[in-house]
Structure formats: C-alpha cells, structure tokens
Length: 148
Image (cartoon, rainbow, N blue to C red):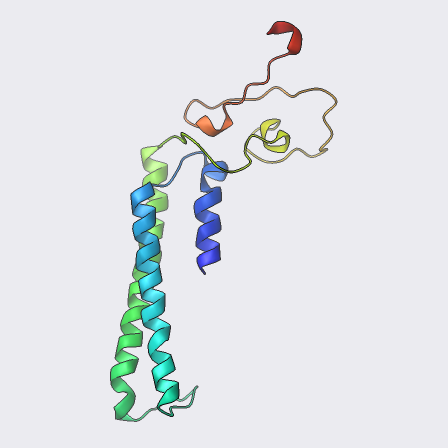
C-alpha cells in the first residue's frame, strides 16, 4: 500500500502536470502510517493471547484489541479520503511543478504530447517539445543547433 502511494506521489507531477501539496502529502503519509500500524499491531497481541484467525465470533476478552484495530482501520480509511482530497486540491489549484526529481527530461518524455512516451522510440532528429506554461517540468525546449 505504501509503495502504491509512494509511486502516485512521485509520478503525479509527470502524469497530471501539477504537483501535490508538500506538507499535506507528508501529513497523509504520517496519518496512513499511524492508521496501518494501529490496525495490524494489535493483531500480534491477539495471536500471542491464543485467538485463532478467521473467527466470526470471539471471546469478550479480545474485544479491546479488536476495538483498537477497528479504530486503526477507520484512520486508514480517513487517510485514503484525505489523499483523494489532495488530488482534488492539486487539480483545482493548478500548482505548477517547480522541480521534479523524476526522469521527465528524458527523450521519451520530451518528444511527445500529453506526457506519454513516443510510439517509435527512434529519434533521427531532436523533436520539437510542446511546453505548457503551468507545467514547468517539461521546460526543456530543444532548439535546432543552427538557430541557437
């Protein structure tokens, strides 16, 4: 789950052209990290206490740890909704990308429109790059060598 959110956070600027809010993204990570750990960590104590898995009904002695685990799943679900809000907010605010540590300057990404790799992957000459003023990640404008 963390790998999926990490990939979305890293590649979001290349795919959409706007970036997520940096502090709010870190808050989402902390919220998700807390929620997942609170969800699954009590299960270790339940297993050590002798509760088997996949039971529909359990003894009342285990109710406290199940309550803690359920609270963690609610926090995880809340962080998922928070990530949806982050995506919505970034699209609405149109926050341009100042710097991207990804490989968006590679020839595959620079030579095509809509940020998708080219179909032939063979460039006999340098391509013309379409630039979007709100997307500063694709600001590599390749000029012809004789018109510099």
